[in-house]
Image 1 (tube, rainbow, N blue to C red):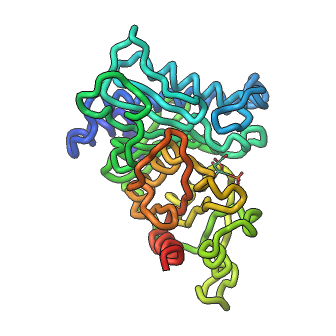
Image 2 (image 1 turned 60 degrees about the vertical axis):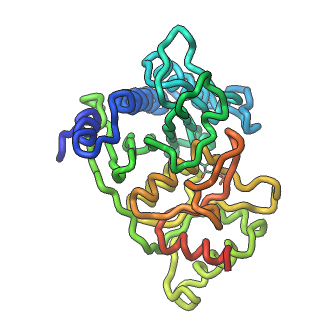
Image 3 (image 1 turned 180 degrees about the vertical axis):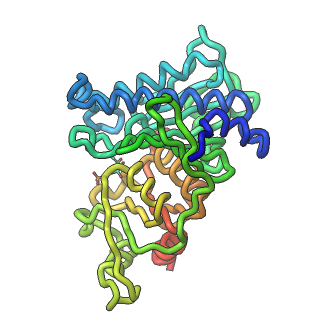
Length: 333
Ligand code: P6P
Protein backbone atom coordinates (compact mmCIF):
# COMPACT_ATOMS: atom_id res chain seq x y z
CA UNK A 1 0.00 0.00 0.00
CA UNK A 2 1.64 3.23 -1.16
CA UNK A 3 1.72 6.18 1.12
CA UNK A 4 2.32 8.70 -1.65
CA UNK A 5 0.27 11.82 -0.98
CA UNK A 6 -1.14 13.96 -3.79
CA UNK A 7 1.45 16.66 -3.02
CA UNK A 8 4.37 14.22 -3.19
CA UNK A 9 3.02 12.77 -6.45
CA UNK A 10 2.75 16.24 -8.01
CA UNK A 11 6.28 17.21 -6.87
CA UNK A 12 7.75 13.96 -8.23
CA UNK A 13 5.82 14.29 -11.50
CA UNK A 14 7.18 17.82 -11.91
CA UNK A 15 10.70 16.48 -11.33
CA UNK A 16 10.30 13.75 -13.99
CA UNK A 17 7.99 15.31 -16.57
CA UNK A 18 8.03 19.06 -15.87
CA UNK A 19 4.31 19.58 -16.60
CA UNK A 20 3.35 20.85 -13.13
CA UNK A 21 4.86 24.27 -12.39
CA UNK A 22 4.31 25.65 -8.89
CA UNK A 23 1.13 27.60 -9.65
CA UNK A 24 -0.49 24.57 -11.29
CA UNK A 25 0.49 22.34 -8.36
CA UNK A 26 -1.09 24.86 -5.99
CA UNK A 27 -4.24 24.94 -8.17
CA UNK A 28 -4.59 21.15 -8.13
CA UNK A 29 -4.00 20.96 -4.38
CA UNK A 30 -6.58 23.71 -3.73
CA UNK A 31 -9.15 21.95 -5.95
CA UNK A 32 -8.44 18.67 -4.10
CA UNK A 33 -8.97 20.40 -0.73
CA UNK A 34 -12.24 21.90 -2.01
CA UNK A 35 -13.35 18.42 -3.12
CA UNK A 36 -12.60 17.13 0.40
CA UNK A 37 -14.95 19.79 1.77
CA UNK A 38 -17.63 18.95 -0.80
CA UNK A 39 -17.26 15.26 0.07
CA UNK A 40 -17.81 16.13 3.73
CA UNK A 41 -21.00 18.06 2.89
CA UNK A 42 -22.27 15.29 0.57
CA UNK A 43 -21.61 12.63 3.22
CA UNK A 44 -23.74 14.55 5.76
CA UNK A 45 -26.86 13.86 3.66
CA UNK A 46 -30.05 14.23 5.65
CA UNK A 47 -28.03 15.00 8.80
CA UNK A 48 -27.01 18.35 7.35
CA UNK A 49 -29.30 20.87 5.72
CA UNK A 50 -27.88 19.90 2.29
CA UNK A 51 -30.49 17.76 0.53
CA UNK A 52 -33.34 18.79 -1.71
CA UNK A 53 -33.74 21.68 -4.09
CA UNK A 54 -32.58 25.22 -3.55
CA UNK A 55 -35.68 26.55 -5.26
CA UNK A 56 -33.54 28.30 -7.90
CA UNK A 57 -32.68 27.47 -11.53
CA UNK A 58 -29.29 27.51 -13.26
CA UNK A 59 -28.21 28.69 -16.68
CA UNK A 60 -29.15 25.27 -18.04
CA UNK A 61 -32.73 25.82 -16.93
CA UNK A 62 -32.34 23.00 -14.38
CA UNK A 63 -33.58 23.18 -10.78
CA UNK A 64 -30.53 23.64 -8.56
CA UNK A 65 -30.05 21.33 -5.61
CA UNK A 66 -28.76 22.84 -2.37
CA UNK A 67 -25.56 20.83 -2.80
CA UNK A 68 -25.06 22.23 -6.33
CA UNK A 69 -24.86 25.71 -4.83
CA UNK A 70 -22.77 24.64 -1.81
CA UNK A 71 -20.25 22.87 -4.08
CA UNK A 72 -20.06 25.87 -6.41
CA UNK A 73 -19.43 28.27 -3.53
CA UNK A 74 -16.78 25.99 -1.98
CA UNK A 75 -14.84 25.91 -5.27
CA UNK A 76 -15.10 29.67 -5.83
CA UNK A 77 -14.06 30.57 -2.27
CA UNK A 78 -11.20 28.05 -2.21
CA UNK A 79 -9.69 29.21 -5.51
CA UNK A 80 -10.07 32.97 -5.78
CA UNK A 81 -7.44 34.19 -3.27
CA UNK A 82 -4.46 31.93 -4.09
CA UNK A 83 -3.00 33.96 -6.96
CA UNK A 84 -2.97 30.94 -9.32
CA UNK A 85 -6.13 31.80 -11.27
CA UNK A 86 -7.30 34.60 -13.55
CA UNK A 87 -10.89 33.39 -13.64
CA UNK A 88 -13.38 30.54 -13.24
CA UNK A 89 -16.41 29.19 -15.09
CA UNK A 90 -19.06 26.85 -13.72
CA UNK A 91 -22.10 24.95 -14.93
CA UNK A 92 -23.95 26.74 -12.11
CA UNK A 93 -23.07 30.28 -13.20
CA UNK A 94 -24.27 32.12 -16.33
CA UNK A 95 -21.11 34.18 -16.78
CA UNK A 96 -17.46 33.76 -15.82
CA UNK A 97 -16.15 34.63 -12.35
CA UNK A 98 -13.13 36.92 -12.67
CA UNK A 99 -10.73 36.85 -9.69
CA UNK A 100 -11.51 40.06 -7.74
CA UNK A 101 -8.94 42.88 -7.93
CA UNK A 102 -8.22 42.53 -4.18
CA UNK A 103 -6.46 39.25 -4.99
CA UNK A 104 -3.41 38.61 -7.21
CA UNK A 105 -4.23 37.08 -10.59
CA UNK A 106 -2.50 33.97 -11.96
CA UNK A 107 -2.13 32.46 -15.43
CA UNK A 108 -4.74 29.68 -15.22
CA UNK A 109 -8.46 29.37 -15.91
CA UNK A 110 -10.51 26.82 -13.94
CA UNK A 111 -13.76 25.38 -15.30
CA UNK A 112 -15.97 22.98 -13.38
CA UNK A 113 -19.22 21.18 -12.96
CA UNK A 114 -19.28 21.50 -9.17
CA UNK A 115 -21.64 18.60 -8.58
CA UNK A 116 -22.40 16.35 -11.55
CA UNK A 117 -25.26 13.89 -11.29
CA UNK A 118 -27.44 16.08 -9.10
CA UNK A 119 -30.52 13.94 -9.78
CA UNK A 120 -28.77 11.27 -7.68
CA UNK A 121 -28.02 13.41 -4.61
CA UNK A 122 -31.29 12.73 -2.78
CA UNK A 123 -31.19 8.98 -3.51
CA UNK A 124 -27.66 8.38 -2.19
CA UNK A 125 -26.09 7.38 -5.51
CA UNK A 126 -22.52 8.40 -6.45
CA UNK A 127 -22.03 11.98 -7.72
CA UNK A 128 -18.92 14.01 -8.40
CA UNK A 129 -17.05 17.21 -9.23
CA UNK A 130 -15.51 17.57 -12.71
CA UNK A 131 -12.79 20.14 -13.42
CA UNK A 132 -10.70 21.37 -16.35
CA UNK A 133 -7.71 23.75 -16.35
CA UNK A 134 -6.70 26.03 -19.24
CA UNK A 135 -3.95 28.63 -19.49
CA UNK A 136 -4.82 32.31 -20.01
CA UNK A 137 -4.03 33.26 -23.62
CA UNK A 138 -0.68 35.07 -23.93
CA UNK A 139 -0.41 38.89 -23.58
CA UNK A 140 -4.06 39.05 -22.75
CA UNK A 141 -5.34 42.15 -20.96
CA UNK A 142 -8.55 41.58 -19.00
CA UNK A 143 -10.24 38.23 -18.50
CA UNK A 144 -13.32 37.66 -20.61
CA UNK A 145 -15.45 34.71 -21.70
CA UNK A 146 -13.52 34.43 -24.96
CA UNK A 147 -10.39 33.43 -23.02
CA UNK A 148 -12.19 30.26 -21.90
CA UNK A 149 -13.26 29.19 -25.41
CA UNK A 150 -10.26 26.94 -26.09
CA UNK A 151 -10.30 23.42 -27.59
CA UNK A 152 -9.92 20.48 -25.22
CA UNK A 153 -6.41 19.86 -26.53
CA UNK A 154 -5.38 23.08 -24.73
CA UNK A 155 -6.13 21.68 -21.27
CA UNK A 156 -3.13 21.58 -18.91
CA UNK A 157 -4.91 19.53 -16.21
CA UNK A 158 -8.26 17.73 -15.94
CA UNK A 159 -9.95 15.47 -13.46
CA UNK A 160 -12.86 14.62 -11.27
CA UNK A 161 -13.60 13.65 -7.71
CA UNK A 162 -16.21 10.93 -7.25
CA UNK A 163 -18.20 10.90 -4.00
CA UNK A 164 -19.12 7.23 -3.77
CA UNK A 165 -18.30 4.37 -1.35
CA UNK A 166 -14.84 5.93 -1.52
CA UNK A 167 -14.01 9.55 -2.31
CA UNK A 168 -11.51 9.28 -5.17
CA UNK A 169 -9.72 12.04 -7.07
CA UNK A 170 -8.77 11.12 -10.66
CA UNK A 171 -6.28 13.39 -12.44
CA UNK A 172 -4.25 13.87 -15.60
CA UNK A 173 -1.73 16.56 -16.52
CA UNK A 174 -0.87 14.85 -19.79
CA UNK A 175 1.34 12.04 -18.49
CA UNK A 176 -1.31 9.35 -17.95
CA UNK A 177 -4.07 9.03 -15.36
CA UNK A 178 -3.61 8.65 -11.60
CA UNK A 179 -6.18 7.91 -8.88
CA UNK A 180 -6.04 9.11 -5.25
CA UNK A 181 -8.31 7.75 -2.52
CA UNK A 182 -9.26 10.04 0.38
CA UNK A 183 -7.84 8.70 3.66
CA UNK A 184 -10.26 10.23 6.13
CA UNK A 185 -8.02 9.54 9.14
CA UNK A 186 -5.10 11.43 7.57
CA UNK A 187 -7.49 13.82 5.81
CA UNK A 188 -5.45 13.53 2.61
CA UNK A 189 -5.65 11.96 -0.84
CA UNK A 190 -3.32 8.94 -1.18
CA UNK A 191 -2.09 7.56 -4.53
CA UNK A 192 -3.92 4.25 -5.11
CA UNK A 193 -3.45 3.77 -8.87
CA UNK A 194 -1.31 5.27 -11.62
CA UNK A 195 -0.88 4.64 -15.36
CA UNK A 196 -4.59 3.70 -15.62
CA UNK A 197 -5.28 1.75 -18.86
CA UNK A 198 -8.70 1.13 -20.45
CA UNK A 199 -9.08 -2.25 -22.30
CA UNK A 200 -9.54 -1.53 -26.03
CA UNK A 201 -12.51 -3.95 -26.20
CA UNK A 202 -15.48 -4.27 -23.88
CA UNK A 203 -18.79 -6.09 -23.32
CA UNK A 204 -20.40 -3.26 -21.34
CA UNK A 205 -22.28 -0.25 -22.72
CA UNK A 206 -23.76 2.71 -20.87
CA UNK A 207 -26.64 4.67 -22.40
CA UNK A 208 -30.08 5.84 -21.27
CA UNK A 209 -32.17 3.22 -23.13
CA UNK A 210 -35.42 5.13 -22.51
CA UNK A 211 -34.36 7.53 -25.29
CA UNK A 212 -34.00 4.74 -27.91
CA UNK A 213 -36.88 5.91 -30.14
CA UNK A 214 -35.21 9.35 -30.41
CA UNK A 215 -31.73 8.16 -31.48
CA UNK A 216 -30.05 8.62 -34.84
CA UNK A 217 -29.69 5.50 -37.00
CA UNK A 218 -25.94 4.80 -36.31
CA UNK A 219 -26.54 4.76 -32.52
CA UNK A 220 -29.62 2.56 -32.92
CA UNK A 221 -27.64 0.16 -35.13
CA UNK A 222 -24.80 -0.08 -32.61
CA UNK A 223 -27.10 -0.75 -29.62
CA UNK A 224 -29.29 -3.20 -31.61
CA UNK A 225 -26.12 -5.18 -32.45
CA UNK A 226 -25.10 -5.20 -28.76
CA UNK A 227 -28.60 -6.41 -27.78
CA UNK A 228 -28.48 -9.16 -30.46
CA UNK A 229 -25.64 -10.70 -28.41
CA UNK A 230 -23.85 -13.95 -29.32
CA UNK A 231 -26.30 -14.79 -32.12
CA UNK A 232 -25.93 -11.31 -33.63
CA UNK A 233 -23.21 -9.61 -35.72
CA UNK A 234 -21.04 -8.93 -32.67
CA UNK A 235 -20.86 -12.63 -31.72
CA UNK A 236 -20.82 -11.84 -28.00
CA UNK A 237 -23.28 -10.88 -25.27
CA UNK A 238 -23.17 -7.37 -23.78
CA UNK A 239 -24.01 -6.03 -20.32
CA UNK A 240 -25.57 -2.59 -19.68
CA UNK A 241 -25.01 0.03 -16.98
CA UNK A 242 -26.50 3.55 -16.57
CA UNK A 243 -25.83 5.40 -13.31
CA UNK A 244 -27.05 8.80 -14.59
CA UNK A 245 -23.93 10.33 -13.04
CA UNK A 246 -21.35 10.77 -15.81
CA UNK A 247 -18.59 10.71 -13.16
CA UNK A 248 -19.67 7.24 -11.95
CA UNK A 249 -20.01 5.81 -15.49
CA UNK A 250 -16.62 7.24 -16.53
CA UNK A 251 -14.99 5.96 -13.31
CA UNK A 252 -16.26 2.44 -14.06
CA UNK A 253 -14.90 2.69 -17.62
CA UNK A 254 -11.48 3.89 -16.40
CA UNK A 255 -11.50 1.01 -13.92
CA UNK A 256 -12.68 -1.89 -16.15
CA UNK A 257 -13.46 -0.59 -19.65
CA UNK A 258 -16.79 0.06 -21.39
CA UNK A 259 -18.44 2.58 -23.67
CA UNK A 260 -20.50 5.60 -22.50
CA UNK A 261 -22.89 7.31 -24.89
CA UNK A 262 -25.05 10.41 -24.54
CA UNK A 263 -25.73 11.00 -28.25
CA UNK A 264 -27.71 13.66 -30.06
CA UNK A 265 -31.38 12.73 -30.23
CA UNK A 266 -34.37 14.20 -31.98
CA UNK A 267 -36.17 15.40 -28.83
CA UNK A 268 -34.45 18.78 -29.22
CA UNK A 269 -32.83 18.60 -32.70
CA UNK A 270 -31.08 21.99 -32.31
CA UNK A 271 -29.20 20.73 -29.23
CA UNK A 272 -26.06 18.76 -30.27
CA UNK A 273 -26.39 16.68 -27.08
CA UNK A 274 -27.15 16.92 -23.36
CA UNK A 275 -23.64 17.10 -21.90
CA UNK A 276 -21.57 20.28 -21.76
CA UNK A 277 -18.38 20.50 -23.78
CA UNK A 278 -16.19 22.76 -21.63
CA UNK A 279 -16.54 21.23 -18.15
CA UNK A 280 -17.92 17.73 -18.72
CA UNK A 281 -16.96 16.31 -22.15
CA UNK A 282 -13.49 17.93 -22.50
CA UNK A 283 -12.03 16.92 -19.10
CA UNK A 284 -13.56 13.43 -19.30
CA UNK A 285 -12.37 12.97 -22.90
CA UNK A 286 -8.78 13.89 -21.99
CA UNK A 287 -8.78 11.44 -19.07
CA UNK A 288 -10.18 8.69 -21.33
CA UNK A 289 -7.59 9.35 -24.08
CA UNK A 290 -4.76 9.52 -21.52
CA UNK A 291 -5.84 6.05 -20.36
CA UNK A 292 -5.76 4.65 -23.93
CA UNK A 293 -9.45 5.14 -24.80
CA UNK A 294 -11.17 7.36 -27.40
CA UNK A 295 -13.81 10.11 -27.29
CA UNK A 296 -15.80 11.52 -30.22
CA UNK A 297 -19.08 13.32 -30.85
CA UNK A 298 -19.92 10.58 -33.37
CA UNK A 299 -17.89 12.20 -36.12
CA UNK A 300 -14.98 14.22 -34.67
CA UNK A 301 -12.56 13.87 -31.77
CA UNK A 302 -14.11 15.83 -28.89
CA UNK A 303 -10.81 17.41 -27.85
CA UNK A 304 -10.43 18.98 -31.31
CA UNK A 305 -13.79 20.80 -31.20
CA UNK A 306 -13.47 24.60 -31.18
CA UNK A 307 -16.01 25.91 -28.61
CA UNK A 308 -18.21 28.87 -29.56
CA UNK A 309 -20.16 29.28 -26.32
CA UNK A 310 -19.20 28.68 -22.68
CA UNK A 311 -22.14 26.37 -21.94
CA UNK A 312 -22.41 24.68 -25.31
CA UNK A 313 -23.47 21.05 -25.39
CA UNK A 314 -22.03 18.13 -27.32
CA UNK A 315 -22.87 14.54 -28.22
CA UNK A 316 -20.55 12.20 -26.29
CA UNK A 317 -19.30 8.72 -27.22
CA UNK A 318 -16.30 7.70 -25.11
CA UNK A 319 -14.50 4.69 -23.63
CA UNK A 320 -12.87 1.52 -24.99
CA UNK A 321 -11.07 2.53 -28.19
CA UNK A 322 -12.34 -0.21 -30.54
CA UNK A 323 -15.98 0.31 -29.55
CA UNK A 324 -15.82 4.12 -29.90
CA UNK A 325 -14.17 3.71 -33.30
CA UNK A 326 -16.96 1.31 -34.35
CA UNK A 327 -19.74 3.76 -33.36
CA UNK A 328 -17.87 6.62 -35.06
CA UNK A 329 -17.46 4.48 -38.21
CA UNK A 330 -21.22 3.85 -38.25
CA UNK A 331 -21.75 7.63 -38.22
CA UNK A 332 -19.28 8.35 -41.02
CA UNK A 333 -20.02 5.34 -43.29
P1 P6P B 1 -30.34 11.35 -17.96
C1 P6P B 1 -26.33 14.33 -14.88
O1 P6P B 1 -27.44 15.19 -14.82
C2 P6P B 1 -25.83 14.31 -16.32
O2 P6P B 1 -25.44 15.59 -16.71
C3 P6P B 1 -24.69 13.32 -16.44
O3 P6P B 1 -23.92 13.24 -15.30
C4 P6P B 1 -25.41 12.01 -16.74
O4 P6P B 1 -24.63 11.11 -17.49
C5 P6P B 1 -26.63 12.46 -17.52
O5 P6P B 1 -26.86 13.84 -17.18
C6 P6P B 1 -27.85 11.65 -17.16
O6 P6P B 1 -28.89 12.09 -18.02
O7 P6P B 1 -31.07 11.92 -19.15
O8 P6P B 1 -30.10 9.87 -18.09
O9 P6P B 1 -30.92 11.72 -16.61
